[in-house]
Amino acid sequence: MLLADGTIELPRAHRAKRALLVLFIVIGVAAAGLLPISISALIGVGAMIALGCLSWRDVGRSLPIAIIMLIVASLAMGKALVVTGMADFFAVGLVRATGNWPVPVILSAFILIMAVLTNLVSNNAAAVIGTPIAIAAAQQLGAEPLPFVLAVLFGANMSFATPFGYQTNLLILSTGGYRFADFLRAGVPLILILWIGFSIVLPLWYGL
Image 1 (tube, one colour):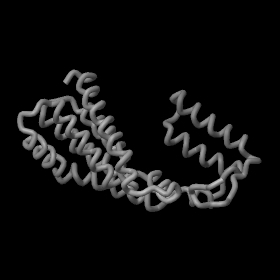
Image 2 (cartoon, one colour):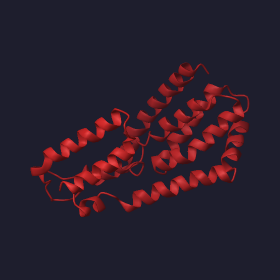
Image 3 (cartoon, one colour):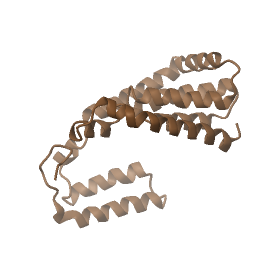
Image 4 (cartoon, one colour):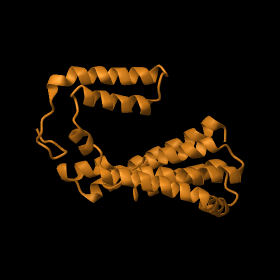
């Protein structure tokens, strides 16, 4: 078998039953509403370490520092956009640029902008940057913010057109022998299909 992550270390299956039990407990506790999933998952990791299913070395290797720093920097950038008023500035500029366009058309344009942005940066960064701008734009238009937030959510996950749009894209780039043009050829049509679909469904669903 070709291991895509480049390791030849095989999993330790003799404690798989313990790990499966912990997984079911974590999901069950979260599903029952006893604890948030973030807390129950953290407790589950501690239980996995205590039961010998994981070692501290395994935990350390599963936390890529580059991705963590990217998420932290994106959150800080999103907070800075709100605090400095830059989100409102971008929102006002978007509203002025679209002029007297109907709200569904502006919403559709926002989805497309997020789809382009997420293929240039990470989807996390696009979502964190786009959310405060979307809320401010909705307030400027006097519209409900939720469909604009969903526009960011859907647009930021259309990271199909570039190999660096998402981590798994990079993972299969060299392993599968793909080229940049292959992602464009498959990703752009898929983005267009989803963009048209969400541009129709969101306004209808929220009565815009």
